[in-house]
Image 1 (cartoon, helix red, strand yellow):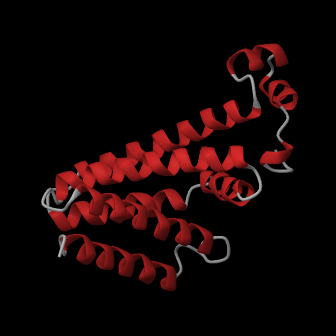
Image 2 (cartoon, helix red, strand yellow; image 1 turned 45 degrees about the horizontal axis):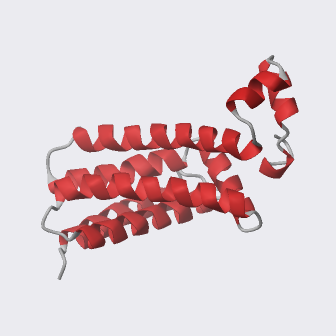
Length: 175
């Protein structure tokens, strides 16, 4: 996949996997089907880490911080490169934009569901807006990591600021 998502060729993928092209196409008839499967798996790993992180804490502040920390941890993995690649190509290819929208909507729903347990008094619409804002901030953080060291003192300070800001914002309620 050296030429990115647009250069992905199913025949090459099959060859690298040591299977026939026909066998690969049986399960993934199109390139988009394969990409959806890849991103579904990534999203599953992402949301499982989110739920585990939130489940390990008991306070409202701790749970909100856990949502952010789980997201920040994921931005530091190699799979983030795959997401950034999808984002960059989504602007030019409607099929990729649809995959990205589906993945982001599912992630937002998972975060909003966790927020419902933390702040049930906040309206469903606001919880969804907060989830979207969390994702947008994490996306921006992910982009920043293309040139900044995630463990630099500046980036660590930004991570702390992000947790404090989001915790304060979420706990404000609907007012």
